[in-house]
Each structure stands twice: as structure tokens, then as C-alpha cells.
Image 1 (cartoon, one colour):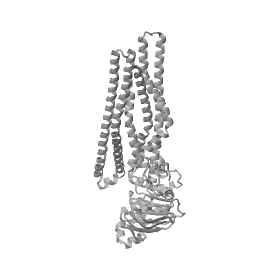
Image 2 (image 1 turned 120 degrees about the vertical axis):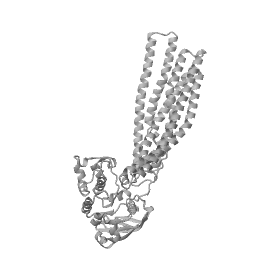
Image 3 (image 1 turned 180 degrees about the horizontal axis):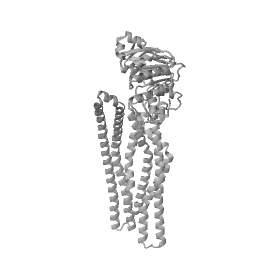
Image 4 (image 1 turned 135 degrees about the vertical axis):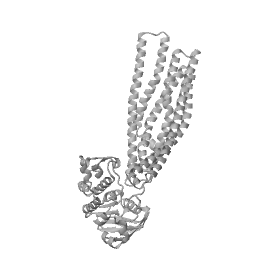
Amino acid sequence: MTTPDTQRPRPGSDILRTALRRNIGAMVWGTVLMGLYQAGETAFPIALGLIVEHTMQGDRSLGALGLSIGALAVIITTVSLSWRFGMRVLQKANTTEAHRWRVRVAACGLQPVARDVDLKSGEILTIATEDADQTADIIEVVPLLISSLVAVVVAAVALGLADIRLGLLVIVGTVAILSVLSVMSKRIGASTQEQQARVARAGAKVADLIIGLRPLHGFGGNHAAFRSYRKVSTEAKHQAITVAKVNGVYAGTALALNAVLAAAVTLTAGWLAFGGEITIGELVMAVGLAQFIMEPLKLFSEMPKYVMIARASAERMALVLTAPPVTTPGPERPSEGGSLEIDCVRYGTLRDVKFQVPAGEFVAIAVYQPRSAADLASVLSVNVPPEAYEGSVRVGGQELADLSVEAVREHMLVNPYDGEIFAGTLRTNIDPSGTSRSVPEAVEASLLTDVVALHREGLDHGVRDRGANLSGGQRQRLSLARALAADTDVLVLHDPTTAVDAVTEQLIARNIAKLRRGRTTVVLTSSPALLDAADRVLVLDEGAITAEDTHRNLLAKDETYCSAVAR
């Protein structure tokens, strides 16, 4: 599958440029409106100074008063409306851009061909949410930076007209403040990037804990797992504290420097007024500007920090968007029919695995080592690129390497033993696309009928994220129902009944054999019920097929098999 993100590399700087380029219209309008806002804010003390100046000169008529009030009303109206509409334009563009990058990152994770990126799902989730939001903030940062500059320039010009020394003081002070803060902002960017990485790792760890909490309790490994999470979480906490300290120092320094500049302007204006070099009106204007300029200076001085944070987040998004696909799939589609052939495959614990499943046969593979089952399932589900293992896999008589991944997964479904359950309803989990015609049959075959009957809503009963409101057996049967409802030509099930009782398992095994009659089905299992329901059983031991027969014949003549699968 080709997406814009796979066409060329997209480093962090390119991501920021793309965000700025496609929001240029909104940014121009936002800059104009926010510039008017800052100009209006700065014009207020200037207008007050002019009013005082005219009053001191004796012009105290009602007309002059009305004109002054009208001028102030225009300034206040401009400030109010420009801020309201300017922020509306910028925040809409910001939110829209963040959504675009969230969709891009999510699309990379949902592509049939996985990306070669050393990140867990929890880390990718953090990138798709927090980093996407912080990257999109650049759309607000640039207009606010420019509008703050407008305020500083207007103030400098107004003060310079009163006395050149006041204007130069503002300009020199602003340059000095930005020089100091730009150095500090680099450390903030680096610290923030590290914090985001550690928080993402902690999120991935807790997601793994939630998934494996039941089995961890089963063998008493929960305490060790919790200690492992505590270590990762503590590292994230310490890094967050470091970032908070750096941000605090940055904010304190910016506030102190801005206050020093405002005080310097005020004192200088007072000294000049005392010496008769500027008028009382100009003094009022200078004092007012010194107070009002604090806000744009504060905003202006914070912008380098936000730019560095946006850049750090963009670099993290680039880790996902620029990662190459694990494999380059072929363009072909499988031929009609459901045959499956594994020819001398060597991968992980597998060594020269060779077997063939003709179309329409139900074959069970008794795997003595669980790792071998996981390796075989990974190969068949195309999670392992064909070039990463020796031998070949043929689906419908065609090499897996020559087929597109989308076509393979339409033709052959490999259902993992830990199939994901999504927030939604029972129905949307069984038939996400809403196109399956065999949902009732799949529900019945997986014995999910009791779960449906428990709730008045039936199949529309709500399911929480990861199936948190379902038991382990219910989640497993729901995953099995989804696999059966897909009704693919070839279905590979990996331990589909490990969380159900023996009676339920027996019924499910018979139902699978009945529902899948005439369709190719492969089950990786040690369940006696599923092994007995299969047309043929293959024994996978030490990475190779070592025996082949029916379940009952193997029980009668193979003691190792009998001890491995008998319960």
C-alpha cells in the first residue's frame, strides 16, 4: 500500500515545513488579526499619553473629550475583535493540522506491511497524540511571534519619537533577552524529546501489563512485572521533573528580564521627564508602554521554547513516518482455491518445516514448543518478510513473496492467540467492516451466544477497550467469532480455546469443523478436542514435522504425543 509518507523521507524539519506551507492562508489571516490586536494593545497607552498631552496644553473641550473617548473605544473594539477572530482562525488550523498528523501516524501503524521502527505500540500512540499536537502548535507559534514583534516595534517607534534613547533601549533589550532565551530553549527541546520518549516507554509497559495481568497473576510474576514498570515510570518521572525545572528556570528568567527591561524604560523615561527632555504626556505614554509591553515581550520570549518543542515532536513523528517498510510485497494475487504449502522453512525455532494442506482440509498442528507455534504464525501472517527466512510459503500455488500483502490477508487470515479487542460493541468487534454475512453462524460456532444472551442489547452490547468488561474466555471467543465471520479461503488459528473450559472447548472444536467444512483450516494447538476434530494432525517438535496421522492413531502409537496432548 502506497501512501504519501512512503514516497520520500520526511524528517522533522520537513514535517514542520509541510505544516506551515499548507496552512499559509490561515496563518496570514491569523498574523494580520493578531498583529492588529498587539498594535491595539500598544496603541492604548500611546492614546492615553496623547490625551494627557492635549489636556495639559489646555484643550479641555467636550469635543476633544468625545474624540478621546471615541478613539479609546475604537482601540478597545479592535483589540477585542481581532483577538477573538485571530485565535479562532489559528486554533482551527492548529486542531485540523494535528488531526492530519494523527491520521498519518495511525495509517503507518495500520498498513498491511509493518514499518521497520523500534517503537512499541504505546510509544506510537504517544507520538500520534501528544507529538502531533505539539508539532501542530507551530501554526500558532509563528503568527504569535510575528504579532509580538509588531507590538515591540510599535512601542520602540513610539518611544523613539519621544526620545531616541527610549526606542534604542527597547530594541537593544529585546535582542539581549532573545539571545539569552534562545540558548536556554535548546536545552528545553532536548529535555522534552527525552521526556516524551520515556513517557511513551512507560505507556507501552503499562499496556503490556494490562494485557498480561491474568497470566502474570497465575504464575506469580506480577510483582516482578510491577517492579519493572515502576523503574520505567520512575525514569519518566525524573525526566519530567528535569523538564519542569528547565521550563521553570526559562519562565523565571524570561519574566525577570522582561521586568528589568520594563523597569529600565520606566526609570529612563522618568529621568528624561525630570530633566525636561520629554513632556508629561510622553512620560505617561512611556510608563504605560513599559507595562503593556510586558505581555508581548513575555509572549515573544516564550516562542523559541515552543519552536524547539515543536521541532522535537516533529523529529519523533519522523521516526515513524520515515521508517521503511519491513518488506516490499509483490503485485500478484493468490489463485482461486485454498491450498497452503510450507516448503523447508527455517526461521527462529523452525528448521526445515515442510507440509502441505490441500484446499478444503482441516489440519491441526500439535506444537510441542510454544515458541515454534508463534514463529510459524508470524511467517504465515506476513509479519516476517520472506527474505528473513529460508524456504518458501505458497498460498494457492503461488509464492508468498510474489503476492501483495492485502491480497494475502483477503485470502488467508491468521488469527493470533491474543487477538485484540476494541472499544465498541460485540457486533463491531466481530464484523468491523459491517459486510460479513456469517455473523450469526460465527457467534454460534464460537459459543458466544451465552454472552449475547446475557445482555438486553444483544450484539450491540458495549465493549470496553481491550475487552476490559469481558472475561478471558469471553474475549477469546469474541476473537474467534471475528476470525470465523471473516470467512476467508484459508483460516489459521493459533490456540483459539486456551481460556475456555473442556466442555466448551469440545463444542467449539466440533462447530469449527462443521462451519469450516470445505474451507482450508489450520489450527496450531495442543487441545485434544481440536486435534480430534481435525482431518489430520501434524506434530511439530523441535522445529520440524516429526509425525503425521489422525489424533486417535497418534494417541495409540506415540507415547510422546500422548503425554504432550492428553489432559
